[in-house]
Image (cartoon, rainbow, N blue to C red; front, side, top):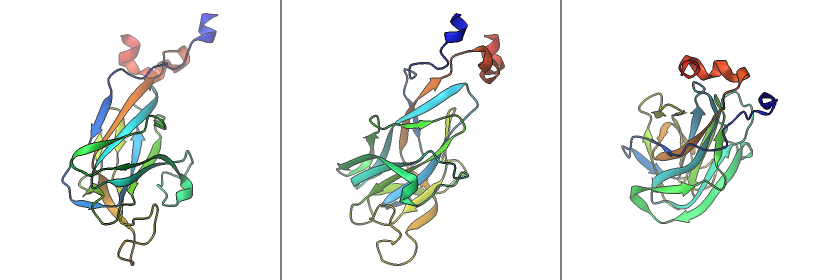
Length: 206
């Protein structure tokens, strides 16, 4: 009878906060950066919880957006209708150290194998709001749990704007990389007979 009511996921987030940090060459600064994050499916995870992102630059009025849970064939869409705003706050400049943006009120949840886009934007006038880099490799960050991939920079002061600040051309710059930090926790599956194979040989023989 106990097996029929066995919990299938842990009701806690791991005690140690995991920090994914990018390289930082300060190749560019501008209004925003949009990039995909993938949760790996190589461990018996139930889901990951991204609690904060951190950026640096002149900052100003910042918003953070995440793609909705839609099947878009892996494409990160530029239309606002595919995104949800999860953070909004004005920040003082932080040109040297990263400024953490607390997402705990609206954390980003990633299931194994799932990809979501994150978009960080400032409406501050000028081109110094957010530091980002040119694409230097296929994976910006690749740790045990997540992969952060290269994305697009945004050179419009308007959120999802299609016109750059100089008035002509594209407002998006491909092959750019997020510069900063993501902090997240992992919620594991609990062992059940039906989940046995997903735990791998090392777990099964421990």
